[in-house]
Image (cartoon, rainbow, N blue to C red; front, side, top):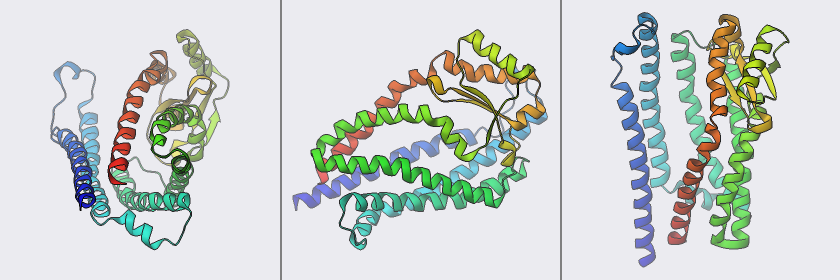
Length: 313
């Protein structure tokens, strides 16, 4: 009887935390949506074009409204899984005795379900909202390909972490939670290093040709003391008309990516201004400074997982 009461209380605690975090997320989105009719602040009226600002707000609010709706749908699905003990149901119907394989399937199947639902919702976001505002150039084939690439990445990276956790749990029991804190830290560093490789799964990166622009970017990097492995053009025009750039990687893998749309429409000076923002993150060591917060988050996750397991099993 005591165990049943403990299990019930633990389920209530998990549901309470789920509702609290979900409600906070919806509240933040509501605050964004409540500003849908906000006027341009007086101190930047000379910077923003009024019509361009109205288009930006219309696009942002369309996305915010859709994000709230899709969030409600995803919340209902997750809540259904929690209330109906979906994971336990999978445990009873999957005829596999290997604990690691069983654990991977029990975790991966619900994630795959959520990803499928998210992808179906994303169809409206991509082919209706993005198209309505003149951004979308994604074809159905590209969209489907991106979905399966994401699914495979989660299966490899997330599945690898889960398999390691289950294997270590079989060896050292609950001490695995202490060990896995360091695994999370190592994983964060590892993914920061290989992020340029992960980007190549979705995009084609072509080295910027030698010339005036490359010389200016190199000079800017040298001036700020930022070492770059490479400067690449990214074929974003295959998916969208967006204009953007990014700095990816960590240390010696630091890579600059320029969307091909950006290169076509912006002047060298405008491109350098955008890159100065990205390079500023590296110069100010924002990624390194964010690690303590990441570590704190990992501590909370590991501690909560340890609390649940030790009180339910």
